[in-house]
Image (tube, rainbow, N blue to C red):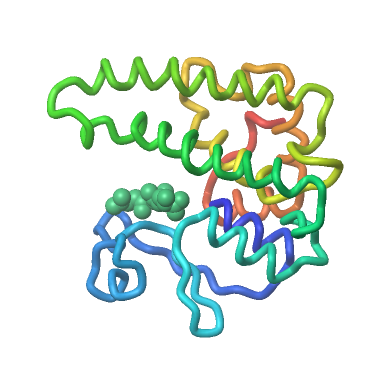
Length: 198
Ligand SMILES: N[C@@H](CCC(=O)N[C@@H](CS)C(=O)NCC(=O)O)C(=O)O
Protein backbone atom coordinates (compact mmCIF):
# COMPACT_ATOMS: atom_id res chain seq x y z
CA UNK A 1 0.00 0.00 0.00
CA UNK A 2 2.80 2.51 0.81
CA UNK A 3 4.41 2.23 -2.65
CA UNK A 4 0.94 2.59 -4.16
CA UNK A 5 0.43 5.90 -2.28
CA UNK A 6 3.80 7.14 -3.53
CA UNK A 7 3.01 6.27 -7.16
CA UNK A 8 -0.37 7.99 -6.91
CA UNK A 9 1.11 11.06 -5.23
CA UNK A 10 3.59 11.43 -8.08
CA UNK A 11 0.85 10.89 -10.68
CA UNK A 12 3.15 8.64 -12.69
CA UNK A 13 1.83 6.00 -15.04
CA UNK A 14 1.85 2.51 -13.62
CA UNK A 15 0.03 -0.77 -13.91
CA UNK A 16 -1.27 -2.36 -10.74
CA UNK A 17 -1.40 -6.15 -10.88
CA UNK A 18 -3.28 -7.94 -8.13
CA UNK A 19 -1.48 -10.89 -6.59
CA UNK A 20 -4.17 -13.32 -5.50
CA UNK A 21 -3.23 -13.93 -1.87
CA UNK A 22 -6.34 -16.08 -1.26
CA UNK A 23 -4.84 -18.60 -3.66
CA UNK A 24 -1.25 -18.00 -2.49
CA UNK A 25 -0.37 -16.23 -5.72
CA UNK A 26 2.72 -14.82 -3.98
CA UNK A 27 4.09 -18.38 -3.78
CA UNK A 28 3.44 -19.21 -7.44
CA UNK A 29 6.39 -20.17 -9.63
CA UNK A 30 6.03 -17.01 -11.73
CA UNK A 31 5.87 -14.67 -8.74
CA UNK A 32 8.77 -16.42 -6.96
CA UNK A 33 10.88 -15.99 -10.07
CA UNK A 34 10.52 -12.22 -9.53
CA UNK A 35 10.53 -12.15 -5.74
CA UNK A 36 12.01 -15.33 -4.24
CA UNK A 37 10.89 -14.15 -0.80
CA UNK A 38 7.27 -14.71 -1.87
CA UNK A 39 6.05 -11.43 -0.36
CA UNK A 40 3.95 -8.61 -1.75
CA UNK A 41 4.70 -6.01 -3.12
CA UNK A 42 7.14 -6.22 -6.00
CA UNK A 43 7.90 -3.37 -8.39
CA UNK A 44 9.10 -3.84 -11.95
CA UNK A 45 10.50 -0.76 -13.65
CA UNK A 46 12.53 -0.69 -16.85
CA UNK A 47 13.52 -4.33 -16.33
CA UNK A 48 14.53 -3.76 -12.71
CA UNK A 49 12.75 -5.88 -10.11
CA UNK A 50 12.56 -4.47 -6.58
CA UNK A 51 10.95 -5.82 -3.43
CA UNK A 52 10.54 -4.58 0.16
CA UNK A 53 8.01 -1.77 0.53
CA UNK A 54 10.41 0.76 2.06
CA UNK A 55 13.06 0.10 -0.61
CA UNK A 56 10.42 0.46 -3.34
CA UNK A 57 9.24 3.78 -1.85
CA UNK A 58 12.83 5.05 -1.67
CA UNK A 59 13.52 3.93 -5.23
CA UNK A 60 10.43 5.69 -6.61
CA UNK A 61 11.01 8.83 -4.52
CA UNK A 62 14.67 9.11 -5.44
CA UNK A 63 13.80 8.75 -9.11
CA UNK A 64 11.55 11.80 -8.68
CA UNK A 65 13.81 13.92 -6.52
CA UNK A 66 11.96 17.12 -7.51
CA UNK A 67 9.01 15.83 -5.43
CA UNK A 68 11.13 15.92 -2.22
CA UNK A 69 9.29 12.78 -1.05
CA UNK A 70 12.78 11.58 -0.10
CA UNK A 71 15.03 14.28 1.38
CA UNK A 72 18.16 14.51 -0.78
CA UNK A 73 21.64 13.59 0.38
CA UNK A 74 22.45 17.19 1.39
CA UNK A 75 19.11 17.87 3.04
CA UNK A 76 19.58 18.41 6.81
CA UNK A 77 16.43 16.35 7.40
CA UNK A 78 17.75 13.26 5.63
CA UNK A 79 19.27 11.49 8.65
CA UNK A 80 16.11 11.91 10.71
CA UNK A 81 14.03 10.81 7.73
CA UNK A 82 16.08 7.61 7.35
CA UNK A 83 15.96 6.95 11.08
CA UNK A 84 12.16 7.07 11.08
CA UNK A 85 11.74 5.13 7.86
CA UNK A 86 13.89 2.32 9.28
CA UNK A 87 11.93 2.40 12.51
CA UNK A 88 8.63 2.21 10.64
CA UNK A 89 9.65 -0.72 8.47
CA UNK A 90 12.02 -2.67 10.77
CA UNK A 91 10.21 -2.24 14.02
CA UNK A 92 6.58 -1.15 13.74
CA UNK A 93 5.76 -3.12 10.61
CA UNK A 94 7.46 -6.22 12.01
CA UNK A 95 5.57 -6.00 15.31
CA UNK A 96 2.29 -5.54 13.42
CA UNK A 97 3.01 -8.64 11.34
CA UNK A 98 3.40 -10.67 14.55
CA UNK A 99 0.05 -9.30 15.77
CA UNK A 100 -1.62 -10.11 12.44
CA UNK A 101 -0.18 -13.62 12.08
CA UNK A 102 0.27 -14.95 15.66
CA UNK A 103 -0.16 -18.53 14.42
CA UNK A 104 3.22 -18.25 12.70
CA UNK A 105 4.88 -17.61 16.07
CA UNK A 106 3.14 -20.04 18.38
CA UNK A 107 1.19 -23.25 17.82
CA UNK A 108 -1.28 -22.69 20.65
CA UNK A 109 -0.93 -19.32 22.29
CA UNK A 110 -2.22 -16.80 19.79
CA UNK A 111 -4.10 -14.82 22.41
CA UNK A 112 -1.07 -14.23 24.62
CA UNK A 113 0.96 -13.10 21.61
CA UNK A 114 -1.79 -10.74 20.49
CA UNK A 115 -2.22 -9.25 23.97
CA UNK A 116 1.53 -8.65 24.26
CA UNK A 117 1.69 -7.21 20.77
CA UNK A 118 -1.21 -4.85 21.51
CA UNK A 119 0.83 -3.38 24.37
CA UNK A 120 4.06 -3.13 22.36
CA UNK A 121 2.39 -1.59 19.33
CA UNK A 122 0.41 0.84 21.43
CA UNK A 123 3.69 2.08 22.98
CA UNK A 124 5.01 2.67 19.47
CA UNK A 125 1.94 4.66 18.43
CA UNK A 126 2.32 6.64 21.64
CA UNK A 127 5.90 7.52 20.65
CA UNK A 128 4.74 8.69 17.22
CA UNK A 129 1.88 10.64 18.76
CA UNK A 130 4.37 12.61 20.87
CA UNK A 131 6.61 13.22 17.85
CA UNK A 132 3.65 14.51 15.83
CA UNK A 133 2.52 17.16 18.32
CA UNK A 134 1.75 20.32 16.34
CA UNK A 135 3.02 18.79 13.10
CA UNK A 136 1.37 18.23 9.72
CA UNK A 137 4.13 15.92 8.46
CA UNK A 138 6.55 13.66 10.30
CA UNK A 139 9.72 15.21 8.88
CA UNK A 140 10.16 18.89 8.08
CA UNK A 141 7.42 20.94 6.46
CA UNK A 142 6.44 18.78 3.50
CA UNK A 143 5.20 15.28 2.91
CA UNK A 144 7.72 12.44 2.64
CA UNK A 145 7.35 8.72 2.09
CA UNK A 146 7.41 8.31 5.90
CA UNK A 147 3.95 9.91 6.05
CA UNK A 148 2.56 7.42 3.55
CA UNK A 149 4.23 4.60 5.45
CA UNK A 150 2.60 5.75 8.68
CA UNK A 151 -0.79 5.91 7.00
CA UNK A 152 -0.40 2.31 5.82
CA UNK A 153 0.60 1.10 9.30
CA UNK A 154 -2.30 3.07 10.80
CA UNK A 155 -4.80 1.33 8.51
CA UNK A 156 -3.32 -2.01 9.60
CA UNK A 157 -3.74 -0.92 13.23
CA UNK A 158 -7.38 0.14 12.95
CA UNK A 159 -8.65 -2.87 14.88
CA UNK A 160 -6.33 -2.51 17.89
CA UNK A 161 -7.86 -1.64 21.27
CA UNK A 162 -5.89 1.62 21.16
CA UNK A 163 -5.91 2.39 17.45
CA UNK A 164 -3.85 5.32 16.13
CA UNK A 165 -7.05 7.36 15.81
CA UNK A 166 -7.46 7.21 19.60
CA UNK A 167 -4.33 9.39 20.03
CA UNK A 168 -4.91 13.15 19.76
CA UNK A 169 -1.99 14.25 17.56
CA UNK A 170 -2.03 11.14 15.42
CA UNK A 171 -5.75 11.45 14.83
CA UNK A 172 -5.41 15.02 13.56
CA UNK A 173 -2.42 14.08 11.42
CA UNK A 174 -4.05 10.98 9.89
CA UNK A 175 -7.37 12.74 9.18
CA UNK A 176 -5.41 15.41 7.37
CA UNK A 177 -3.51 12.84 5.28
CA UNK A 178 -6.79 11.08 4.49
CA UNK A 179 -7.87 14.21 2.59
CA UNK A 180 -5.04 13.86 0.07
CA UNK A 181 -6.02 12.86 -3.42
CA UNK A 182 -3.41 10.07 -3.51
CA UNK A 183 -4.72 8.52 -0.31
CA UNK A 184 -8.35 8.76 -1.46
CA UNK A 185 -7.52 7.19 -4.85
CA UNK A 186 -5.52 4.31 -3.39
CA UNK A 187 -8.12 3.50 -0.75
CA UNK A 188 -10.79 3.49 -3.43
CA UNK A 189 -8.76 1.12 -5.61
CA UNK A 190 -7.87 -1.13 -2.67
CA UNK A 191 -11.47 -1.11 -1.43
CA UNK A 192 -10.65 0.47 1.95
CA UNK A 193 -13.10 2.78 3.65
CA UNK A 194 -11.76 6.11 4.89
CA UNK A 195 -14.94 6.88 6.83
CA UNK A 196 -13.26 6.64 10.25
CA UNK A 197 -10.68 9.23 9.14
CA UNK A 198 -13.27 11.93 8.52
N1 LIG B 1 9.12 -6.64 4.56
C1 LIG B 1 8.19 -6.85 3.48
C2 LIG B 1 6.97 -7.56 4.05
C3 LIG B 1 5.99 -7.87 2.97
C4 LIG B 1 4.82 -8.70 3.47
O1 LIG B 1 4.87 -9.37 4.52
N2 LIG B 1 3.76 -8.68 2.68
C5 LIG B 1 2.56 -9.41 3.00
C6 LIG B 1 1.36 -8.67 2.46
S1 LIG B 1 1.16 -7.13 3.23
C7 LIG B 1 2.61 -10.76 2.30
O2 LIG B 1 3.12 -10.86 1.21
N3 LIG B 1 2.05 -11.78 2.96
C8 LIG B 1 1.89 -13.07 2.35
C9 LIG B 1 2.85 -14.09 2.84
O3 LIG B 1 3.62 -13.82 3.79
O4 LIG B 1 2.83 -15.20 2.29
C10 LIG B 1 7.79 -5.51 2.85
O5 LIG B 1 7.77 -4.51 3.57
O6 LIG B 1 7.55 -5.46 1.63
